[in-house]
Length: 462
Image (cartoon, rainbow, N blue to C red; front, side):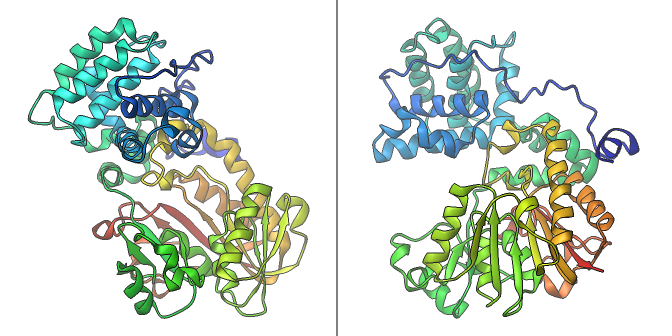
């Protein structure tokens, strides 16, 4: 069914692409830029971070946690390196348009460090992080100080002078912020205008949302500041200094959770004393939402380390849940639960603003395996539900296949759609589809800072 859907039934989804994804760089035979002291350690660290993210398809958080040149920086320099790296990923589509336009021929694949120097230099220009002379001088020094990039110092100088010395920044197509392989998919499914709105969200910084588990929202707002959103979340530009000492945090009344991510658990409608399964529980935000209702919650996850995070979060919020480590197929059982929340592992393309590298280190060709797992989890969840039980399926994905094929699998497993009603999702009525499912796009609530993209569907077991 999966292969037929993707490759034969319809051309609605743009899957017909050459298997060599231009956004997934060839692996450079484990060669890495030399880790040596440089004239500008912050910019050197930023260039290394970008190289490791894009050449090894790793997340920025992973690389920051392991990269020595970044860890060795002082507080101010570390913040500067992080700002450069995040700006590079945020503007990467435009950076590569400018870089490719300035090059007479493509950089060789072995020029991975020089490419990172150029990309991070252009990012500083587009994000107004440094004046042109500093960008050029430091970039040339970095190239000269590195054995691999030494021979390209002249090219680095010439290219950056061509780009960053212009007082008026070039007018670039907003949709070019997205990698071409993803952009074409979104244009096909959502249309050009919505694709532009999605891309534009990359240029705005992700806010911090708090889900209020207990207490008066106004009192908690008085402690943290921020704005109460239509769904009840508290939105902040950033967490205030010393927030862990604030009463609401210390008492476990709030958790950090994107406003869109808080919706699936609410739509499940958990009641006190019901047996509820959070099937893919880590890191635990939805588990805590469910436990706060007084329901008997079982949190199931395959990853022991991630399940440990659930335990830590439950301890901080003073909530209880039964934790089980293992696969859903082996541990979920049959006819056990009144309701199940299935927040399934997915492509996570809906988090493109908070995980800036996500579209650059992933490929649509990864989707079939992901979807196969989602379908299997859906069948397992259907078996684990009691008769007349409820199931909410959610993915933080923009990909239509991760919605439509999961819905089809649920119906095949004996579930029927339970339409989500407008009054259940105040302020997000626009997200409700004709069939009663929800498709939240990143530009919704853009005047308030946007949202993570999500697909949500609710089912009943017949």
